[in-house]
Length: 96
Image 1 (cartoon, one colour):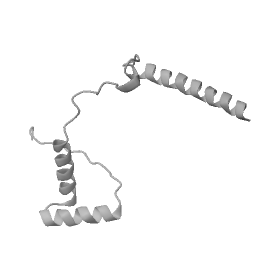
Image 2: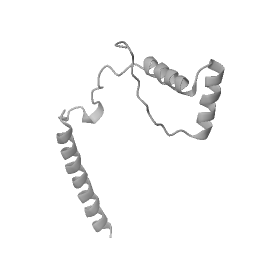
Image 3: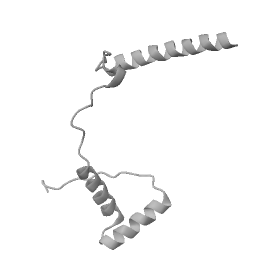
């Protein structure tokens, strides 16, 4: 029993039409619906390699310093959004 592979149970929401198509495909392939879904997921994961690296920023943003820390990024985004909102408000007041 030491070599027993344990699997996890996962609940998934699926449209009735898609479930019917998966059931039909499973019947054609001689698999259970669960086995067919595992087969499809495994095939997709194996066929799509993970990105090797993050693409560098290009265009006019390439010269900007970008923090690797998500908290710094969020703070910078918050500040940029506040500046943009203030700019829009000033323009709206000039028009009104």
